Length: 370
Image (cartoon, rainbow, N blue to C red):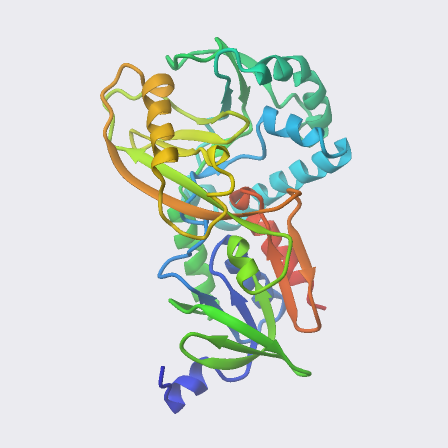
């Protein structure tokens, strides 16, 4: 790209903070930096036309972990660690709702449900341990989080009882990102889309950034591109693709809420008289460890089978659209928020909980700067 004097002067001179990634974390990082340093010049770089990771490609769950997910975490982590991570997710959701507002989020507190396939051994484990997990989380809500309820939606091939969480909700992530983008732009923070950062070189006074189109200097660099982070950094985070589909509108759809299945590896919800369904990454962990935004026959077939045999077995269903998003995961679900060097900072590895903790991670990332 052949930049003019005016473009260099207006867009790339005296940049205080550059943020890589315009998802939930990146936008919240920029907003918090601007609040702390009102006179700063901030530039956000985004490789996609829209946020390329998972911020606008997820299912819109305002959740903090299903019962089976939390029990699975307790097998490898202490109760304190599991409690603190759940607390962080809840705090992050509260921050997001306060920042954007429930109306702008399209927030709907319909509650969340966990279903169990027939003869799934995890069912008995969950029923036996529901009191244990409720006791663990009780300080967060001062009441039980999980309760047993009956199948009231006509689902088939699942256990008659499932687990209900009244503190879970759903939101519209498209509207969420629209509002966050408006807030960033209203603060005078510049965003450039379609700009991929190839590399960076730290100097004594800042960071030299190289993109496909141009190079420029910034005083501080904040990397907030989650599943794409290893393209720039050597960190313990891997990309994890999440495949999703949505049906065409369904007449007399009575399904209402957010739903988890198979330890959270499958998830679905209602939206605009449709069913939005995603997951299946556990069918091919290695194959889904990619940044390619396509779909596979294996996983898409499994999603369609779930629709027809469990969710809506007696209704004609047409698929309207399919897509994928890229999450950032690792050996632990704890996010990475750290200063990497004098001028470089990172907030990545959200573990599939970007909606829940993205706002908080952006705040924590900005606060790393003294």
